Length: 359
Ligand code: DP6
Image (cartoon, rainbow, N blue to C red):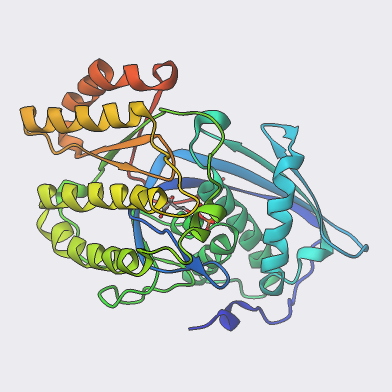
């Protein structure tokens, strides 16, 4: 399959104005996407759990216009946010050939996140996927005979990827793969696909408590971060490692082997940070409290036999992952021993979710 399948035939219906809204979740990668090429294509395949509580709600209002060019305004929590507009403009330019109606309307994009903007949780995955879904809802109204749900979701994921790579894993749930991988039939560099193999009960409703260690602006933007993988001395080994880790996860998901899961997931998180430590320029994105938390998790696991583990994104916050059966015990532990390492003691309790919803 190539990009051309996402270029629509000319639209058969007309539409003056309207409004569409979607709620789209964040996701947490187990095997990380770090390094891209071409137009938002990943250097290795990644896999993530879709989340449930961390999400973005976006309403897109549109009014037909005669003027040339793109015309839109972005509002965050009801207030105009011009800071977001260059990113959206770039997104519109990238996707225009796939959504030829974009210059025909004036848009108002109203968005809000379930998590605080300053929490250090990236809103690009949930935000870009929500916007992509809203645009697909408009396209659906313009096409005679509609669009099947499967094609709708696939194109939404394709568009979301052009906004932010990891956003293509936020359309559906509960386990999503992005990037071609020989062990995952149907996987593609162009969009996310549902993980196709057996998943053991142990991973159902898996829990993710996000510890907010550092709530500031991102120290390294994702684009700068991904670019660090160009000419990186360990790049090729890292891409191979990620591919192998995804292969190793397949029997682990099937058997429910939580110890093997922990080893792969924690190694992925530390490898991601190792890439940043060893790039030029180099970055240390963990904070002292990130390490305090990791050590506490390891000590608790050794003492209690819990199957708790951690993962990290490109920042200092820690995602604490654990099976649903341990919810009570681990929540207690987090409150008792980890909350003190969070900014203002704040953390967000989340769990695996099943994808975006039209609202
Ligand atoms: C560390 O998807 O934010 O979270 O494509 O430049 O928007 P862009 O990057 P982005 O990168 C996310 C990287 C990561 C790992 C992951 O989610 O797989």
